[in-house]
Amino acid sequence: MKKTQFALDLREALGAESAGLWVFFMDKVRVTLPFLMDTAGRPKAEIVQASAIGQAGFSSWSEMIEESPEQGGLGWSVDSWKAWKRAYGVVQAHPYLRDLELTASEINTLSREIQPFPPTPEALEAAKVGRTKKLDAKRGNAVAALQGQLAEAKTAIESLTTQLGRVTADLEGTKNAFTTRDGEYVDLNNKHQQAIGQLKTARERVADLEKDVSQKSETIVNQTAQLARYSKMGWFERLLAVFSPRNQ
Image (tube, rainbow, N blue to C red):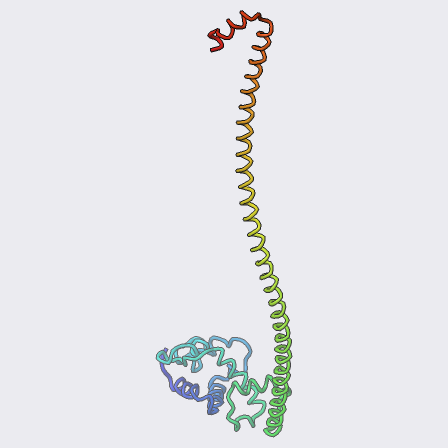
């Protein structure tokens, strides 16, 4: 790969698209490398090798486009080349575009949005005015639609805010009710614990009373048995029984 005057000329035009020099670039490519314009698909290798591309040491136009200037390439991009080639086709079909110094991007945009493409500069200006009006109308419709959506969103927000207020109030009421119920629960639980303590104490007292009653019943039974024995004894036997060690 080597630097050539052809590549130098093309690089000068690459940096001046806004000045309309891109058309000069395409003209030079069309004159020097006509097969890039006239043939569909990949050109034959022998044609490429015999052209300025091969003379610069490259095997394809894409390779020369993307290679750095230091290596004799253009330091450009294949996508940009394709966009320029598309715009150049419009310029060739409508030569008056050469005098308008439009960029390749502008021509591609107009070609895409204005169909069929205007045949004269006057028709192009009229079409551009119509295009601007359509764009303004579209923007106006879009703004109106957005304003409608904004109004709907505002209404929805207000409704949601009201609902949120109700839910918040309900939640606060539920919270207060819970607090009240929680206090009642604590109070009932305390009373329940007190009742359990009282029941335990009562059971202990009942057990003590039952034990005392049992003891007293046993005493009564014993005393009754003694009285029954005494009733069958004479007075001397009773006297002996009273002073008996068993009764001491």
